[in-house]
Image 1 (cartoon, rainbow, N blue to C red):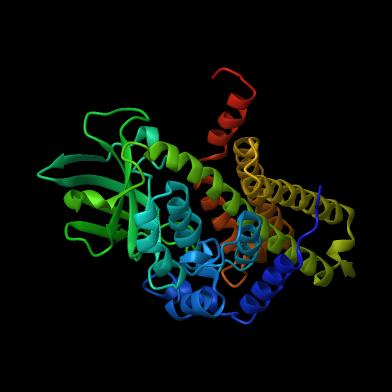
Image 2: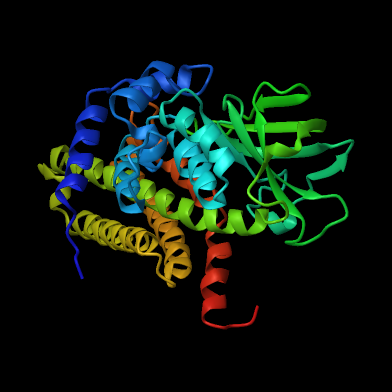
Length: 379
């Protein structure tokens, strides 16, 4: 088994790290922007770096790379917490199109996503906050040759600024996993109401998006009608892997900041990092981060190889990386003492981001159920 990154993958990591390091104020600029990100920086990411087309097939103007490559980039983005529509456009919208195998939709959207001309997102969660298509209440019906969509979506990543939103809804009268379809909805559609949500994590813009009887052409259906649950299950598995890598990168940054502080902070005439309690806590943090990194890249490698074990490894990555990130962020604040809670230090961004990403794409217990099902344990 090959555990080393390729030369190309190392270049992706090094170039991403260098690019992001040169933009020290990007997080603050993104948070303060009305879109929740800096459009000029996103343009650089898309055109100069080619990140928006990372997993888009080369035929449509992308780089055609895989999940390991995507995870490498997501780890670097996690380390900086720079707000951008990368995750919503690439890890969600582009990934959904890949899974759908919808040639017409791919031809329409892939080139424009890859070039950065359009941003996208996926609207699944509703007021309850559950990422489970079987529980959807949003509905659609066919009338006069069109689709009429009524939906109330909450916690949609960059939902207030995305150019294209992929809505999940069920046909009126259906229940459970039956009758769920996905629709491409332009962000400027009439009767589409988009409202920014005030959330704890300022680096991940979320929105409430609602519509009542929005009229769409039948061609707006992505993939086959009624197969939305299958598409969203596959999307969740892959999005969990890229999110896990993001969490690893953020947890690593929390560890790095803590170690640096422990070496510099003098107490009782010596660095606080020389005290056993601090040393052992930092060692535990490192063990957690390295373990999380291992499961994140293992899951990414299984995704690229189309392994039958991918579903369980993706769920395991989501559980472990979510809980490790939150634990490491909390420990980092603890080891910084009182200043760890101050606005001037970056740790509060990571702590809040850790809590927000822990519930995104389903809470850890949802993914434990996936693993339990694999073990054939009844619920």
